[in-house]
View 1 (cartoon, rainbow, N blue to C red):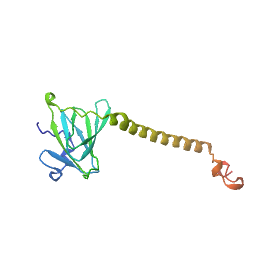
View 2: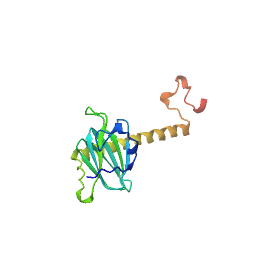
View 3: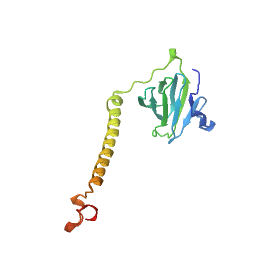
View 4: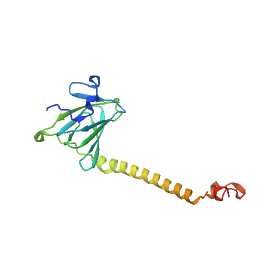
Amino acid sequence: MNTAIPQSSLSVLSAADRVSAGHWKLQAGRALSLHPRERGVLEIALGRAWVTVAGAHCASADHVLAAGERLVVEPGHHVVIEPWAGSGWSAVAFRWDAAPVATAVAAPAPTDWERGVAQPARELAQALAGVGRAAARVVAGFVAWAGWVPRALALPGGRGGAPCGG
């Protein structure tokens, strides 16, 4: 395979960040954004990576890739790579190779657990967090609009139930 570097922020990685010829190292707490101009294969050499691939129509998919796993990325997609801490290695080493259409490596199929449980659970958690924030803003807005103090917060002896010091 030809080694090709997509248009990205890869150029900001120094030679010290390279693991071995053709491999790049990304430290924990960092993320790398790729915008490939040609079909490519992302291969994880060491560690694990959280990889988000966004398509041309804003649809995105998340993948967790471990050492030895590969992901084919089509041109025009946006790829974000982040180290997935754990397994005794806080960084990820990866390789990007051009993938001719005829010899492209297929992306690993998501497991039943990932597709049926993990991804929907992440989506549900995000949705519930949004619902909680929205509900809190609605209640706070209603309380501010009405100038109302709940009875449980009112002071004993009837001092505190009236709006604005009445």
